[in-house]
Length: 397
Image: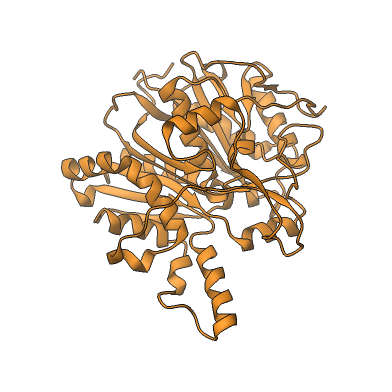
């Protein structure tokens, strides 16, 4: 399936915390059941006082160490909850390669904005910002810097922010950095937490649904927003599980500032480039985790693009009804879902679409289906036509 001409990047650990939970057994149970208890309606967060469904992290989050109080935001607490799951492997990589040979590349779109919102509300009520608040807590680079400081790393460290493809692009950057021999290991991933700015922004675009989102359905009427942190440790050294990033493809069609190309031309290009990068054929893909936002335009164009490459023979589903659209963390969130499917040989997430739209020609996962040693392709498409496709699977190189 994967020839020696390709360049697999092995996944040595995966930490993940979203509406699915943060414990592996809980995540697996929710993925298999197809129902998430933390996808909940909210009537308080929108300026219009209307309801929308949000995928919230409800577990208690770890505290930021006092020595790193400059990074004390809820977003970084969410990051830390995922990092703690991979901390032993990261420390082993530092011991093996050295702190200067481990990079940090993070995707986000909100960073610590929710803390900034709270700080400004405090100022309006009290005339001054709360003690300990500084604007740099909501700067995009804050999360990557926090991770580097937490692990005392001195290798390359930066943030990518390309809206909903942010944490997919970090995998491409990591692969290039490893292939060039600039570093020996990379911590990659993404994190975004719920904030009023983003939700009200999407609401102004009339993109939010007031019920659980319905990707690919004739009744689809918009997205649900969620929050998540997902991080992986990557290196060229073969992992015990042999789960790897097999290929990646990206494109920028720049069709419109917010709407995707109606025929999915950029999405198709990203998927074809990912297949070529992995040296795989369409028949080598056993599951496609679709971007599947449940907006009319996105689902239609993505279905067209997938159908042109794969026909209706490859099972497809969107997992956003289980996590919400986690914005800049979406690619990493769905990469973590792919990792769980591969690691634990889970059945593919079912779509539960009981009223498939006429413009959707692809084969949706509606019954218990397994991967059968094939690879997973995961899509993320962002504002401005910034498209990412990642392929994960077992490396047989």
